Image (cartoon, rainbow, N blue to C red):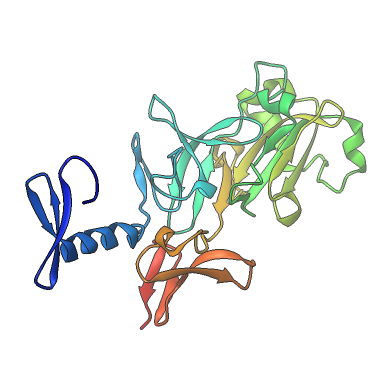
Length: 278
């Protein structure tokens, strides 16, 4: 007798039967069901649903609970179905996503009226969240506008032939910046996460991707190009956190538990799971 309510366990031949009320369930079948629950494996990760007309490929994620993609690549899909990159200094609309090149392009903050200031000045400019796996690509020509003379001591290009001077003097949106000092630089390893602004240095900026100096500023490709890093094997606590063909074990490179591929398999960073090696 297992307790009240008619729960009885009795042996019939070599098979244990569990009686619950009038329902008799073979014990071996019950054990199999229990085993299936305990030994489940996590499903392979998937890309998130589109946001408006823009796809959200793996590992990018618009899920606050990790239902799709990876949390280290978090984006935001607004109620109006606008895909955004949320940074430590603000939210920026995403203009394009290139899964093959692992690139997204966001719109720079717009200049405010005729004051030659961008709204993110109050937050120190544009800065990526260091907890996410994004960095500025090396194809951005960043133009700092409305700068003070302090910038003349910097290694940036603040000359009369700087690309920012062409922008400030010919683009209507930059009317308020025409007579101010400006400086340009190419994003790279030392500027991989931030476009800094301050009232003591520069108070506005814009960015051009893959700038062609032979084209007029009206034909430049404006935006901030951001690259996402190749996703590594996901972290885990037990093998039940891992998908098929991987096991939760210490990763020698990071000294943390990761879902590492089993023998004869290798990590597919594009799709986010282990595939059979050929």
